[in-house]
Amino acid sequence: MTDTLAPAAPALHPPFGGTPLAELRRRIRGRVAVPIDPDWDAQRAAWALAVDQRPAIIVRAADADDVGTAVRFAVAHRLRVAAQGTGHNAAPLGDLRGTMLLRTDLMRAVEIDPVRMRARVQAGAVWQEVTDAAGAHGLAALAGSSPDVGVVGYTLGGGVSWLARSHGLASTSVTAVDLVTADGQLRHVDERTDPELLWALRGGGGAFGVVTAMEFRLYPLVTVHAGAMFWPVDRAADVMHAWRDWTVDLPASVMSSARVLRFPPFDEIPEPLRGGSFVIVEAVLQDPPAVADALLSELRRLGPAMDTFAPTPLPALGALHMDPPGPVAAIGDGTLVRDLDDAAIDAFLRVVATPRGAALMSAEFRVLGGALAVGSDEASAATGLDGRYLMFGVGATPTREAASAVRVALDALLGEIDPWRSAADTPNFTESPTAAQRLFGDALGRLRAVKHRVDPHDVIRSNHELGRGPGREPRTQQEARS
Ligand SMILES: Cc1cc2nc3c(=O)[nH]c(=O)nc-3n(C[C@H](O)[C@H](O)[C@H](O)COP(=O)(O)OP(=O)(O)OC[C@H]3O[C@@H](n4cnc5c(N)ncnc54)[C@H](O)[C@@H]3O)c2cc1C
Image 1 (cartoon, rainbow, N blue to C red):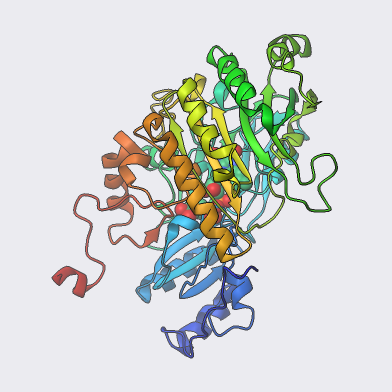
Image 2: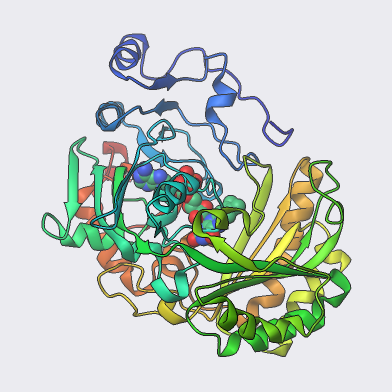
């Protein structure tokens, strides 16, 4: 734990009294933690260690029954409920006073049905667990770049995978969801039982209930051509401009990112990367090697110092983006970009490739379009992403000073790119509180109507809230009067 996460002052008595708490502990098969517990700080830490979470109580559910018990307890004690898989995107949650943090990290079962090409995963599963299990059957899941991002949180927020330009957002592949709604009931949601709630859960975020399991489509794909090319960071301008040109007519079979990455000087990072700064193009091509090599030749003409492209089994893609393998103290933020002209690339580099961006470990663009275009899937709340590119920056925050420097650099980056920003953003790459209209766009009214139906008292908190819907019922008499 870092010094940005100071120990919480222990509360002498849980606000709900000893007897109900003892009863909750007796009934929960997982774990209940309250601020007076000796390991409270470990229990409340999110994957994003820079986030200082101080809920009223934590329940780590062992199964769907635990989730139901916990939600009913929360409602009875006028607590709200925030579900959390890993805490990768805990930052926008904000103040957790009066909230139960309902962690699902103990619920990890992954089942693959190779005949129906479906995965069914419990709410705490992380992507590498699914890509490994699916890969054993020659199947691919729409996993993101990071091996330990939670499948459920990622998918509720859309989910931009290495296969996204051909297969769309991961949320569009969801076929069924089990969730406990604010009334404490476990519902199985699919096209037959509740198509409108299924629509909302396909990219509309985590505001509708606590998901206990999710089922989604897998795709028959064993190997892709994947890798990265590295150049010294002083080549950033010509590489980034060339990458942008390369992406303009890129087939939907290719997904790619271009980034400036500063490797920390840690022993576990191999030479020649340790402590070095690079401009890096990563790509995944669902094409035969000869076709992939022809496509990549335009980038190879720039003479990369290192080139790792090779036939790659799908589960190995978890290592491609070099995301941290475990919890880190870091702050990140991102946005969708309408398009990248020369001036936009130059604006990005004015921060990222200069001392203004020195606090950023990584700043990248990912190319969108193809099956990610808005309107690609009308059966989902998130029909696509409203931009040709996605931008994301992140920096390590081992100290308060480092955290301030990262925030300043991120604000500078977002400020420079502002003229090219889309009117929309996407929940997964937005790590600061953001207006619901930006994140959910035209779907927002319909999402609020679903929320009002399944959670009229707004018990369930999502990291990106939907805001006031049509006639939300007051939660307390005091609120009703105000
Ligand atoms: C290193 C890194 C790499 C990433 N790479 C990608 C990428 O390639 N593509 C991409 O799309 N995104 C990516 N992301 C973003 C990631 O998808 C989001 O941070 C996502 O919200 C993480 O989900 P989680 O469950 O791990 O995190 P959490 O913080 O646990 O969950 C985020 C939110 O999801 C909801 N939620 C989680 N579990 C439940 C549940 N059981 N029931 C109801 N709601 C729930 C809640 O609203 C919660 O606040 C990356 C993030 C990081 C830090």
